[in-house]
Image (cartoon, rainbow, N blue to C red; front, side):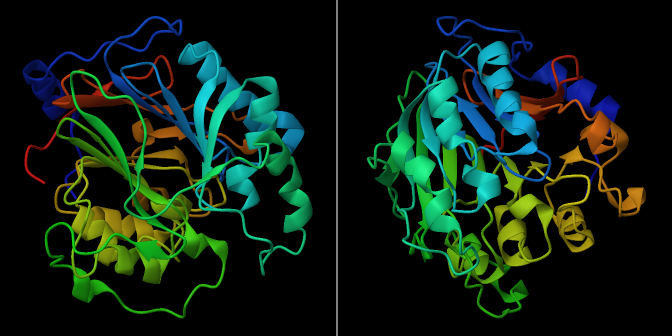
Length: 355
């Protein structure tokens, strides 16, 4: 992996379309940028996308406990930073509590338009309490959530620069027959099948002009390989949300190396995710310039992790302020920046023109 040096960043920034700085916006103020927030829910997931048209999509919503910590952090970013008045679309990648835990509370306290998921199962083998846990979500969505299938497009408004959000896989079914052949398919070492709902996660490809972003929820090893074998429907991408918090049961090299992201964000916690095997795979990615982490893994050698300037939160959980990471894509989709929190240094990247 080539770490992106500050000198290179400075030179590159001079050649890129200027990306507006992070400021608090009203819902009616449009910068023309595509904003992708990675909100710190300390080992869960909460990924907020705000389009140039001002439309919003939240993928996952963190844990429901901890005195409302995750809920409050999501509302703060959505309302105070992104300037939203409600969430237009709220998606659940899969049915684990660290991913759908605050959807119902968000609907009550902030407002949610349309609920999207993979369909609600009657039960989960790994969670005997699931029928009770899902009751609030059913009530909030009035049992009208929309079930997504592989190949489906989520209906987001597109403006001058074309924008689309495509489901690559859901409920253990994947898009087939699309994209280039995967030259890294042989890197897949089959593992025992995963019976949990992780392997049923929704994975999506967000396209904005030439910019491409992929997030796969908690998709696990064998399904990751299925998604990109024999063909890779996403092609080579610009930004990747490291799968499953960076845990070792995910981030199959057959997937990560085929996607060949230029940058990545890992939504890990101080003691969850950021596995050594995942970090080694990220270092092997040919086009990788830099990955960012929401937390420093306190149980892992720091030399294996991202440099400190690319880690959003480095203090113990009790003192953590929950800094977020933002990827902001220029209005023409030709470049983007990634920064930590409102005062962080924007690191500049050029969108790849070949996929």
